[in-house]
Amino acid sequence: MNDQNDRPAPAVRPEPRFRIRALHTESTVTVYQAYQPGIGLAAARGGRFPSSWSRERMTWIKPSFLWMMYRCGWATKQNQETVLAVEISRDGFVWALRNACLSHYVPALHGDQATWKRQLRAAPARVQWDPERDLRLNPLPYRSLQLGLAGEAAARYADEWVVGIEDATPLATEVHARVRAGELERAAELLPQERPFPLEDDVLGHLRAESDR
Image (tube, rainbow, N blue to C red; front, side):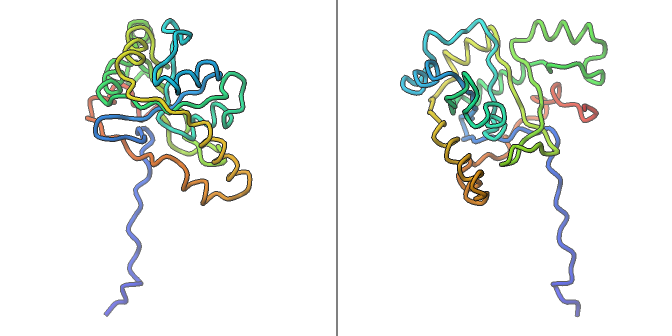
């Protein structure tokens, strides 16, 4: 009889290159942004973006906490000192994805560049995939979603989709302190519990190209 310990371990499926991982519930998803304190702290206090928040500019939301930390330097970069955890409706998030265009040209998806440029100009949202980050902010071999909202999408985000806003700066500071102290296990325990965000195949089909860089 063969010893069960001799059996090979089951193969671990690699992380898909294009998949959204987020802190989410059945009805909401949490995304992250970083602002100067005048906007960020006011938003956290009121649960809504203040009047100084511009609906005319594209605003980028990130479901990945660690990618946000990479972008804002653990809340140390100028005008990014306040990290917000923004809980928004799942329906709004999915609407934005359905109506988004990739921020860069992919022949397999768009055909010719002129078609892509027309889609990009018309889309109220755009998507780019950047390498996910580990606790030391090193790139990982799979991608993290960034979702840019403009025009109608930005207005819906601010006025309809937001369920709540929390100041996540203290969390960023504590995780960063643990990382600098070499306490990676403790730092990992503090991270938001991001897990794959279930979506119908058609929601991401026009935003995910396996032949992409």
